[in-house]
Length: 163
Ligand code: GDP
Ligand code: MG
Image 1 (cartoon, protein in one colour):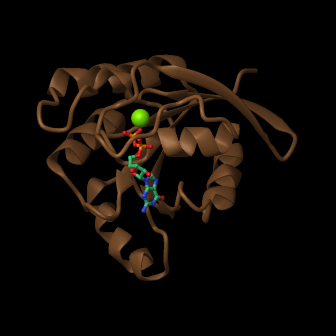
Image 2 (cartoon, protein in one colour; image 1 turned 60 degrees about the vertical axis):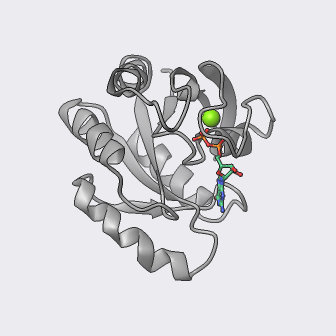
Image 3 (cartoon, rainbow, N blue to C red; image 1 turned 90 degrees about the vertical axis):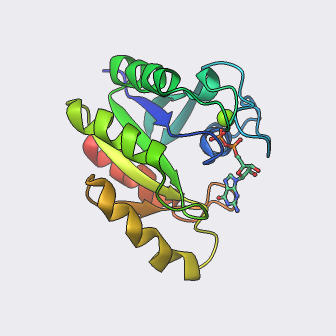
């Protein structure tokens, strides 16, 4: 049985940073300019003795200011089609955006398991900030910092539970 994890979310939330942390590579391009990841990228990692494939779906979105709903839709469709479980990343620095709500709606309609991941929780102050993502209607929030790694172990434990 293939365990395929897809990472979705609007540009600049940290999808590629998380991908690189999970796969311990620098395969995905991380840049402070939104939308830099050029294409869909595949990698591998293991956790508690189980093997996973991971997809960074960010490549369809080319820029923060001219992101089209259709491109986000495509990204989510790829994830729904190819993955067994979807990590939906949101950005605690930015809070809930219209695009997050759009993605949440598409994911709720799919029958795939979705884990809502609040990224950029680099310190304990941000823990309380991320509670606003409950409004996305996807249940429990997993706080992580893709940058410093905090929370990623708990997140992977949950992935193992759900696939
Ligand atoms: P993507 O567009 O979703 O793939 O996002 P990237 O992985 O390219 O990251 C976008 C920006 O957010 C980069 O400047 C990253 O360094 C930054 N970033 C990613 N994860 C974190 C995090 O956990 N905390 C903070 N403070 N910044 C992060
Ligand atoms: Mg990216």
